[in-house]
Length: 193
Image 1 (cartoon, rainbow, N blue to C red):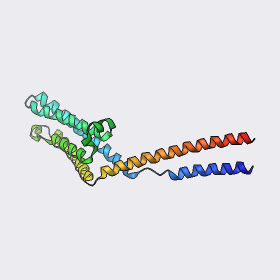
Image 2 (image 1 turned 30 degrees about the vertical axis):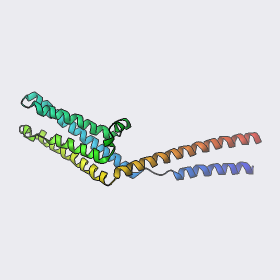
Image 3 (image 1 turned 90 degrees about the vertical axis):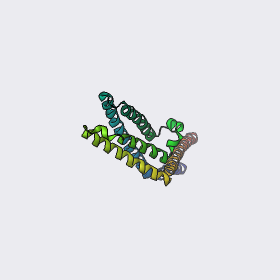
Image 4 (image 1 turned 135 degrees about the vertical axis):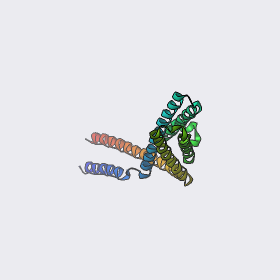
């Protein structure tokens, strides 16, 4: 009887220690994800504005080059959105976008492209205002990315991600070992009975 109670007590201690080792969410990673979502939504806003501007340029027929320019802005803004998803295949293909300075420079470039040629929108004041808002928002995101990249916050984020993944894996391994130990202890108890 004493052996069974000591085994049960030992088993409960293992579960409580596994729970105490698991920490809460990483606020730095949550902040980075939130900022990534804001940046992606801003880039999507720029895509929408550039598509509308391109359609108007092609429809009027007076400036086909502006329409082509807007199409390039849309394609590059799509790269910004994909970079914010941090899709591993894409980031391995484009090493520059793994670094925050590179992402920020691309975002600033899209913001400038979105804001270019404002004189074509004299008759469309509401589109000009939306274009300005979208470009300044993405410009702000790009500047924040460049400054954060200079201060190596991107590298800090990757370090947090790796430690978070390794900590989660260690907790899963520990829980797996504890389940295996419980199974073996149950087998021992059956053998003794």
